[in-house]
Structures are given as structure tokens and as C-alpha cells.
Image (cartoon, rainbow, N blue to C red; front, side, top):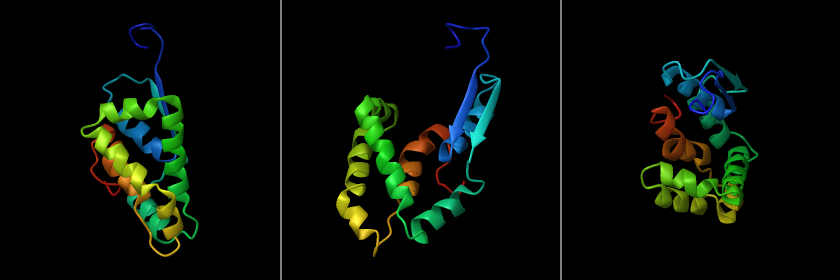
Amino acid sequence: LKRRYPEAPLLVLGWSAGGNVALAALADSQNLFAAGLMVSAPHDMGGTMSFLESFQWFPYVYVNIKSLMEEYESTGAKAALAASVPEGDRIMRWMDDMLSWTSFAAHWTLTRPFGSAWHERITSKYTGHQSAGE
């Protein structure tokens, strides 16, 4: 976009955990973005993931990440995302296994780190943070 429209200001926008990615991009961009906006981004990502993965009765993080993966699959973005991170194909297979319906059914007795796993394997490659706590 910057090459095609060099004079146009570039803005970054992120919702929820994507707001944290937007903030990291804004901080690391070295004047690439003119401004940024975070919408409903968690102030404490580690605390948020801990609550959602351990104490939330509804498997919100499972539903969120599963929906994200299905959208990526339907648009072809999953392959592009896999290609953009080290060992991306293996990570995507692992995420698919973790997001199986068996995992969903087991949520009621055994919690799994759906959101933390996504962050540690995908988001951290873009933000440079190794855990949701960072």
C-alpha cells in the first residue's frame, strides 16, 4: 500500500487480542503507521488468557480460535499464515488437532490453552512476545 500510495497515511486497527498485535506493530513500525486503534484489547493478556482458559464456564477461547481458523481456511489465508511462520504447516496441524470436537466436548472437564497456544505459536511471531504474559 505504501509503495502504491506513498502519500496516504497508513492506519493500523485491531480488535480484542488483535489490538495487542496492532499496538506491537504501531510501536515497532518506525513511522510506518500514522495512527492506530485498539478496540476491546485486553490490558493484561496473560491474566485474560488465564481467566478465559481456566475459569470461564463457556469455552469462549475455543469458539473464538475455531472460528478464526475456519475463516482462514475458507479464504485461503490459512496457507499464507502457515507459510509466514517457522514450521507453520506443523503448527496448523497441531492447532487443528487441538480444536477438534473432542477437545470441545472435553472442555467441561479438562481445560486446554486454546488462546495461549494460538498466541505462542502464531501471534508471537509477529509481536516478538513469547507468551501472553509478556
